[in-house]
Length: 206
Image (cartoon, rainbow, N blue to C red; front, side):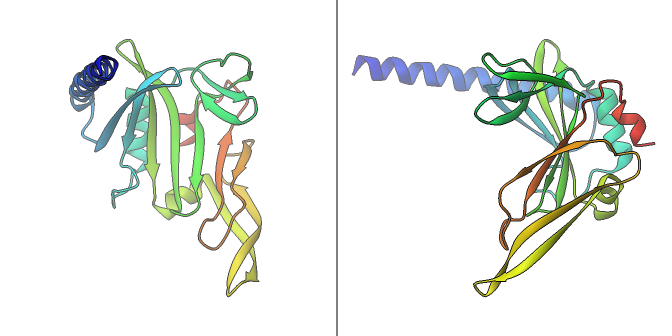
């Protein structure tokens, strides 16, 4: 019973600390920008948490001007691709992993929602946060890439057999990772990353 009580106190302490950190960060962000956002404190993967701008549950769209504003306000820091038994992206080199330093942003296309998010890491005060900037406007997404699918009939519906990813405009030279097998209900997701460290992502938007 005593151990359970100690565990409960530790959990309450952590929740209180996370809430205070969330309030502190919201004050900082609100002074910098009026763009709608949400903050999630997680203390995971070398970060304190994530900040999502105009996320999946919002109907409005992040436009080009707002995206440039966010990149100016929240400067990207180093990003790594981490390979072990699985593949991931983070702000640090992971122990016992194959770590590759890549450009400081990735593009994540979500097939089911037909949305694109730009992800990077930034420091606010002394804490590292993951930034997720969501784009759902089709014409804006098409400035980055176009995704088309080959389909076959399957059990009264269809199954995706091949996915074609075309990089548009300045957004070329990215390598891509395909997530999921693809189906009627769940089209593939993609992550695109660039190994050229000299690319200035913001300049791509002009």
